[in-house]
Image (tube, rainbow, N blue to C red; front, side, top):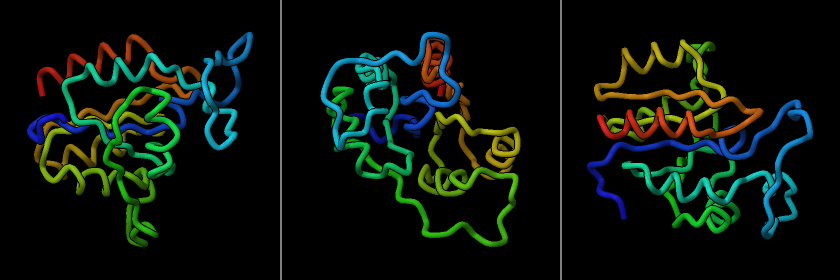
Length: 165
């Protein structure tokens, strides 16, 4: 189990692990293996990503509306242990800034002052500004192209940042 002193890596599913949107020429690649819950999108999850995620110097945390289904459905496919899961509030704060992603306040609170990286396909400059102003530790808000998911370049960026966090 990773040390609690390691940076957190909040990992979204749809976009980073399951590419979606207009398919690339030739369609999305699919990978053999069981398709839990009959969800055909799970076949787009490259099982090799699990090994690469485990090699990062961080504590992985599911940050997805899949909630614990990410552990049931995706962790076995990726060869990941059961990961902590972010519990989302029932409703966003009605006075919240509409430019911010609905996840960002909860992620910063969950990090509790620890360095963290957030991997998602919906990150904006407003989120980066808010975190810079409200979170005391180093952060990396890394946007992934949802049509391709995590790439070698994404792992290079994450690895470099995590090794210096």
